[in-house]
Image 1: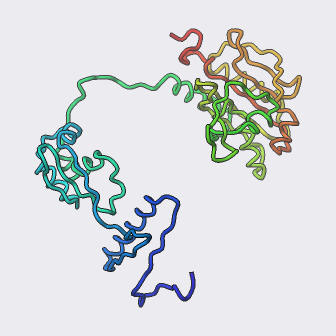
Image 2: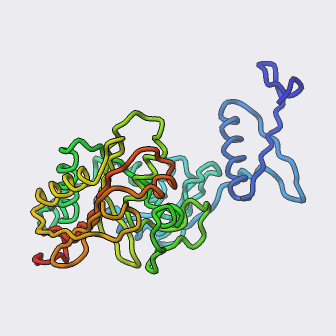
Image 3: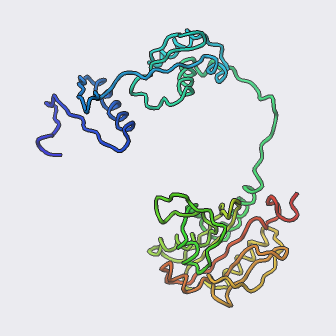
Amino acid sequence: NGELTRVTTETRNILLDCTGTDERAVRTAVTIICTAMAEAGASIESIEIEGVRWPDLSPAVRYVQTGDCNRLLGTTLSPDEMAELLRRMRYGAAGAKEGMVRVEVPCYRADIMHDWDLFEDVAIAFGYDRFPTGISPTFAIGKPHPVNQIGSLVRQVITGFGFIEVIPFTLSNEAVMFTAMQRPVRDDLLRVLHPITEDHTLLRTDLLPLLLEICQLNRHRELPQRIFCVGDVVRGVETFQKAAFVSIHPAADFTEAYAHADAICRELALPFTVRESDDPAFIGGRRGDILVNGKDAGVFGEIHPAVLNAFELEHSVAAFELDLRAVPGYPGSPGTP
């Protein structure tokens, strides 16, 4: 931090000062730095702080069972054989009482937190090429999950209309999800118990607000901007998928939103009807609800000026959002076994 403490090729004494809020993390950092310097030829000297010598470079002692290791790896190692493999990996190891191995873990191996971490090193020393291969006794052929199949189909359809996919955060907040959208706060929110920031206090219940937020962050980009998202939303304890798009440019209007919404629903073979919507996020008379079997499945229209102001957008936005549970083939949708 200054000329007095400059480190040069002539430096012979270095004081390592490490501070932190977690004593274990501080000890680990000091140990790793000291042993790395020792490997480069340095001589380590300790100091006493409140009766405790730092750094403590003594190894941690663990006792592990060869039976656990053999069951995990499929081997038949004896304690002495297992100890020999561990010594190859720079551990201090020796057979202890029957079925046990006493292992001295070097102080710089902060990654050893469980017996299985030691078994992994045993496998490395044993040689992965020596493990026999075989065919699983249970034969099965994997296939895409119906939810993922429908999501992929929706992506292909919307991409074909010239939209670019974005992936917004799963966490959001009431200001974006409800206040900015002029929508009432839902009762079935899944909130974060101890959020570290006011921006991420709940799991998203819709995708449309997050797309408008992305438009807000890209106000300096040229228009038109046409983006969409397909992803999970959470309401209560239920997780399901939605799809949404927004198109922002001076000429964006209800007609554009309806045209794309109609085309998407037809491509998905979705038998739907349309009625006038009362969603406050859209302009009255320029909004519509998508109904499937008489139930609400989506909404489309022209975003309300107050919502545009909340997201600091200066141009009109055509938008659409669809609940993919209404799509034939989605698990639990009407007509799906």
